[in-house]
Picture 1 (tube, one colour):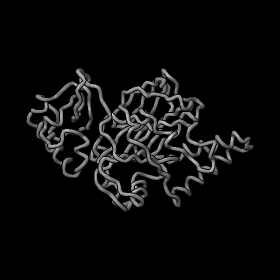
Picture 2: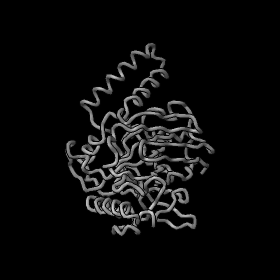
Picture 3: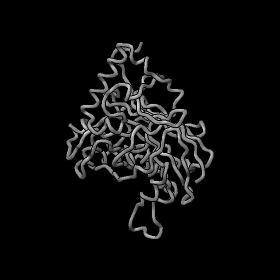
Picture 4: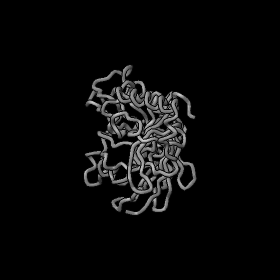
Length: 326
């Protein structure tokens, strides 16, 4: 029998017959929310009133594991296909938020321009990141929930570009209405954490016909399937330190990204403070916190049909997405 008060994850699943349901995951077992009689039968429903539903689910899981009813309703995880655990409302995406990543971009640009002293460039880049962390503000833009796909789904590479790039990120799921939060109180807004692969078509980000307008994130990031999400939503109380998680992505079994969330320039609380000073955050919103070093642009190697991305973040499960031509 499982521990009386176990840690758990929340997910959404497809059965072998094509049906779907939301459930609670402990180890290799899944129990449908509807079997626990917690009110909402979906993760989306839980998020609409997270402070209350979180306690209801926690108490129900504790009781089920203590009394043995958990085993009565449990389904083997291996018989199910995990889907995106919820459907985000607003999607906020943080860019240039990892020190090493931004430093690499600066050094790469200097190398292209034939700079004679890359060590100096690297030292200046590190100082720039230090100053930005102390005196700057985050760079955040918005995306579309229609780009979401599941953690095992194929990623469809559209023909409207060639430089399709991976960007594995820690996703933050908002659990309460939050407007003008202070940094000290910002984490109170967090329901949990999830894996996000914020895929970007690099050669669509900048408009050659209108260079003065800057970035075109609609074209660069929002193709269908360009936001693999999940497999789990890990409730915040079960993630000891979200600023000390390991992020890894392998392309065709070769590790490309391997970093810690500790390398963020602006931490989660600062990102929430910044966004909520501009617009209210709502239950079910998703915040992608930025991608560490090791993107395809660094290797000059972009996604192609047949590639397989395998991704993980400490305590949040793993993704496996195959790339196909659109």
